[in-house]
Image (cartoon, rainbow, N blue to C red; front, side, top):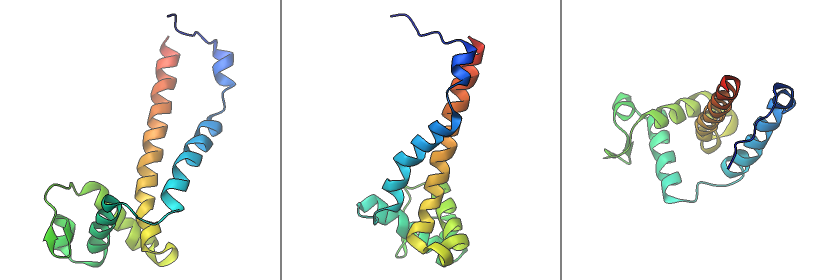
Length: 123
């Protein structure tokens, strides 16, 4: 199988906004248009809500209802709790907690695009 070789003019014709719009159309309905109905969604929201409305101990070690969750790493929960604190008054806590996931998705999508762009320029 031979790889497809595109000239530079053809790759410039591919709009960046099209990729971003496709990614947003993929992720936004799944994050915004539903309630946290899976156990993992509810548990994650519980940890983020506890961090946002709790004390320093909750920020250092994830808790749900005063039970520690040692198998969970805190980075994603920190971002969700920070979004709850910043945007919870405007969007409500469940939707504000999802802003962190949207940010991680956009960062990953743009990283894939940038990597593909750099590898395409190298060839």
